[in-house]
Structure formats: C-alpha cells, structure tokens
Length: 87
Image 1: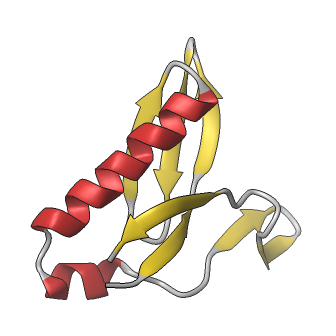
Image 2 (image 1 turned 90 degrees about the vertical axis):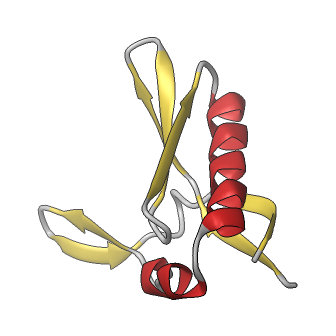
C-alpha cells in the first residue's frame, strides 16, 4: 500500500464547515475546520475500504482546475493535504 495526499477544500457554511475532496468527489462536514478535515479523512478511508478498484480509478484525477471569471487555473493555495490516507 502507498500513502497518498488528497486535496481538502474547506468552506464555512452557516454554523459549521463543509469539506470536499475534488479528486474523489467526496464531501463531509464538521463544527470546526479541524473536525471537517478529520471527518473528510475518515470518509476517504471508508471509501477505499468499500469501493471497487474500477470505481477508485474512475474517480481519481491528476489535476484540479478552479474556475474564475478570468479563466481557469491550477490551485495550489487552497490545497490542504489529507495525510496518511492509504490507497
């Protein structure tokens, strides 16, 4: 098994935070940024435990593009690695 880092985009909504992993199209939430990140990490781990290899390969992408009114660009600023996720 190898360890891979995934992107966590975390955004405040109402009284909590929503976390999203664009590489796998998985989302979670939490009351704090850290809780949202930890919950997303758990959701990713559960995904790898139950998903077929075909589904995993279908969801993985190598690049993420963020849209802006001026065009698209590769975002490195919004990336927060989800550490120690085994795949």
